[in-house]
Length: 327
Image (cartoon, rainbow, N blue to C red; front, side, top):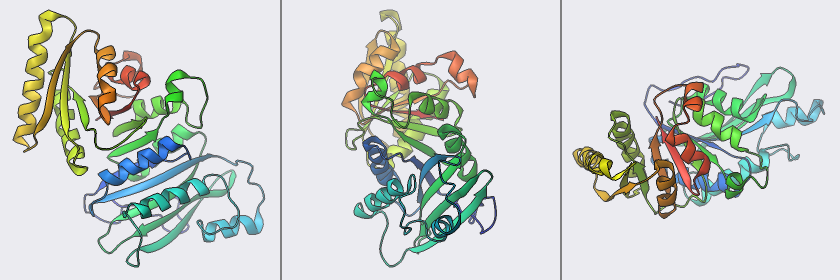
């Protein structure tokens, strides 16, 4: 699915029937958001994948300068003279993707689009780059009442397979309030219909640790993440945690079943692990040896996920490294 905004329209529409892998990367200028972008570049490097960078700006963020400045901004989003909120962060994201070879060169077509937003002089603006193979990179400056709402609204527009949000170690310690605060990630992880990756110290090459509990939902998460891992040639490991020694046999069976499911897909498991103890504590302790920890969600929707206090969301909130909740 490709994103496009007809000029003068308030909607972004599908321009192709081809099924594409789509990644939404939330950019806020932090190092972690750019680490997340670099990981997205590995996952979305193929011609079948699109990468959309979004910066969400609160409505009317001091932009009632009107007239010429806003008109120029709309006409050429990346080349205006003023550093309006979010533009420099999106431009840096573009430069990173060019450095990584994901985009750039004479075969990329560039288009700019604008949509009016009530109460804001600048509105929504984006610039999209499309190459000869149909691969798309989009830079989106989006207006919304708040950050989480803007990101979730963007999912409605693009129906992404994965949302990546940057989160630093400062989140967990709660010492410094950053642009993205924990409530933003939590709201997105609770309400997004797709998989959500919260990036902390995210570095490629250390593999995915997929947590399983013997449920069909966990097995489905194994299959889903195996496809993602294969996109970046990331090794896959499996972990199951039993609450006590009596449950160890079930934990071993869970990883064995998951390993067989991956073998059926032609994917080799790097290692299988079983531990005894509190699942949240054991997963968090094992996590830093891997690029990211992968968990299935609770299977509920919306606020039910939050109130259930599932293992996945507790790990996401407290982990030292990156966590992806798969759905």
